[in-house]
Image (cartoon, rainbow over all chains, first blue to last red; front, side, top):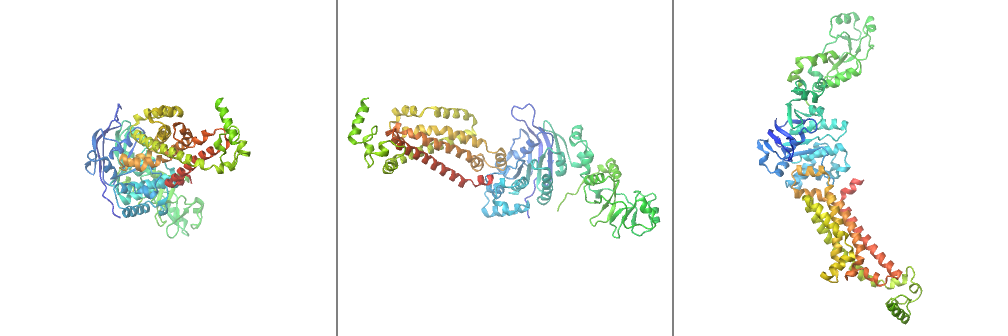
Length: 387
Length: 249
C-alpha cells in the first residue's frame, strides 16, 4: 500500500517562553529528525518535552527560532492546514465519545473534504492495519478496551496519511502488559508505514525501545543529549544523562542486543553411546568445563554429570537438564534473566531449528559489557521485529 | 362583608351551594358532591372539562414562547461567554438578579410598560429561564473533556468546527438538563400569568380557589403538561444522542 513520503523535522534553536515565565520552557532546541525515523523526547516532568513536540504542529507557538517540517518553516503555515498534515496522538486518546470508531478515524479526511467513498475505504484499510475487528466500526469509544481505544487513536492520526506523526505518551495510560504489546505492534506498523515520528515519553525504557534516536531533555527545556539509544547507554554525555538513564544502564544495554550478536562459547559435545573416555579427553582445556549431550540432530538433551562420565558409554538420559535453552534471537536481557532464574552458569543456545549454536555464560555477558566491542555501533544496532 | 352578603343572596337564588358562585351550577349537578365541595366531583369535572381546554392551550403557549426565547438567548450568551470568559461572572450575576425578582412584582413592574396581556407574562418567565439554562450550558461546555478538545484542535479543527463538532454535542446532556428544569419550573410559574392578564391555567384556578374539584383539575393539568413536555425532551435527547446509551451499557 502506498504511503505519502515521510518528512524530516528540524528544530532550529526553537525556543518557547510562556508569557510571564522567568525561564524558557524549551530553550534553543536543536534536533534533526531524518525522514522515516522515530525520535523520542524523554526527560523528567517539566523538561519541556511535550511543549517541544507541540511546537511542531503549532499547538504551542514558537517564541524564537524555527522548526522546519519537510524543509518548510511551520511559522509560514496556517495552523489548521499544518495540523491536518501532521498526525496527532495523545495519552488519553482524545477520541470523541459521541462519534463512532469509524467517524473518529474519519475526522481529518472529513476536515479535508474527502468524498464519502474514499473516506469509507480509508477507514476500512486503517482498521485492518491496526488489526481491529471491522464490526467495531459502528461502536462508540466507551465500548472498546483501553488498548483498542489507543489503537484507534493511532489509526485516526494516520487517516490522512501524514508525513509526520506526533505522539504524546501514547501508551502511558495503558497497563504494562498491554503497553508492551502496543509498543511491539506499533513498531511493526511503523516498519510498514515508515512515518517520521516524534514520540514523547517519561519512561527511559520505552524511549530506548521505541527510538531510532532519543533526545534527553532536562529542566528548562535544555537538550542534554541527542543520540541513538546505544550511544546514550554506552556514552552518556554527562551526569544528568547517566542518572536519568539509570544505574542499570548496563542492563538496559542488554535490551539492545540479541544473543546472536555476541561470540558464544563452545561446549564439548557428547553423543549417546559414545565412549566416555573420548568425552573426557575433549573436556581438557575446553571453554566450558561440562560436556553437553546432544541428539543426532545436535539438539541439546542435557549436561553430563561426573557420575554420567564414570560409566563406559555416554548414557541416553543425562543427570542434568539442559534448561534454560536459549534462542539465538532472544534479547540478551531476557537470556540473562533466564540464566539467572535457573541458577546455572551455562545455557545452551540454539538456532531456529533447535540445533546447538553455542553456549552462553554469565561470564560472557559480563565480559562483553566491559569490552570495547560493546561500544561499537555494529553490535548495538538491534534488528527491529518486522513480522 | 358586603360582598359576602351579596354572594349569599346570589347563591340562594341559584340554589347553588353556599360559597360557590352562581355560574358553577349551570349544569345538572347542583347538589351532592359539588354542593358539599367534595374532594373531586367526577361528574362535574366531566361536564365542565371544556372550561379548561382554552386555558390549557394558552398556558402551553405562554410556556412555549418563554422557554424557546429563554433557551435561544441563554445558549447564545453561553456560547459567546464560553470563548470570552471575562463575561461569565457579570452574566451569571445579571441572570441571577433577574431570577430573584418575585414573579408577581415582576408582572406589576411591567404592567405600566407592556399593559395587561401575553407579553407581560412572557418577559418575566423568559427572564427566569435564563439563569437555569445559561448556568447549565456553561457547565456543559466547560465539562467537555480537555483531551477531546486538544485532539480536535491538534487535528486541525477551527474554533467554530470544534464548537459544532465536539463541544456542543458533548455539552448537550447538560444543556438539555437545564432545559428540562426550565420547562418544569416555567409550567409551574405560568399559573401566575393570569395576574399579568395573560390567562393560562391560573385563570380557572383563581376564579374558584375554594372549589376542591377545580383546584385538583388545574393541578392535574399543570402537572400533566410538565410531564408531557419533559418526556418529549427526554425522548428527543435519546434519539439524538445514541452514544449516551452506548456509554451506559
